[in-house]
Length: 484
Image (cartoon, rainbow, N blue to C red):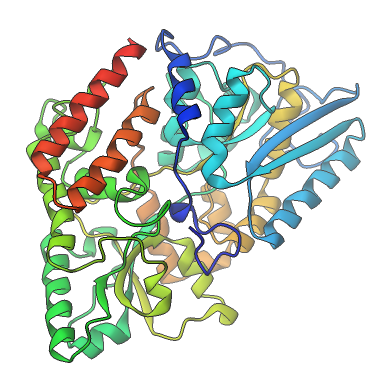
């Protein structure tokens, strides 16, 4: 579903997250692989001249000088707005000007088709050298020997500069599989004008991420908004906007959206054998069991809260596009890139708006799932593929990309270079991103979220949360057996 602030596919959290039946059929091809990482993990890579000594700025690349023979490097990525597409294409031209023997051939696909296309290409043994992936699939990329370990090709300084949650999400068994691309962070937006009209105090705008609302305070405010607006005869304004993730509505994007309701009820810092920790983890340490993790009492409470937003008439049951921008919802959970868009004079909305952290349950939760290029493990041109990815993510190119697209930089040093990240809202978003957690770590993440998306929708439509989560956990466990 397209967000009006992004003419070519919407913000990260709003893009499709759908696997076709074909992709679901290919996923079992990973079955039988041990959880030991790629066959090429730990392979020695000759060191090249290092940063600043290649034919152009290859960012953090430190591998061998690129080959002189004629080669083509294929890069598959998602579609962006025209200005972002044009910028990336200009970078390919500069890369090929420095290395005339290397042709960059890009393939642009709709965002929701990336997972499917990647799996189809890998199954056909003919994948692009560089592919836009997602770091929530890192374990599958590693165990399935789909992606090349990257750390030997990159400087230690570059790797350490990656935001710690993104580095954690993009690594498995000590190896980095995902290049840092951008940093998706979800925040809660609010329309001050609606709160004022309803006579309800708006959310706090803290410097500290822990200074936002609790879950109870969120519901108190939403009920007050609903009641006061109805007393004024306003039946068209909703307290909470409908999700526009994926295809919109409930059950559209468990990873980045609905999982918040469950995982915020857990606690990463709790003892590992505690129910609170298991709720946060979502899956056993070996990644093969979700029963006792997905369906804990805390998880059930989280989904009960979620269901309450629909039962109490606080948010629409179906898909309603972009209520925040339309001014028909007081609150909306969305990517921080919306704030960067609204902050431009030409995009200023017609209402006064603010940003607050997503309310906390037992703990503050955010998901570090983000776009991440991967290098195909079987590429014939590993040096050129990694070097192209490193070039696209060098300092100058990333700063320009983030200013065009609006996403938070994935590396700390880039944030320091961008003066706009000295503003209070941006500082809050960066602090939130530093506390994000990866998706549950399992080779079967494809199976996991494909089960959870319809489960979440069923709960929104009235299914008993406890029964639905127990059934979902059992189904996921059954699907995960093929990976043992």
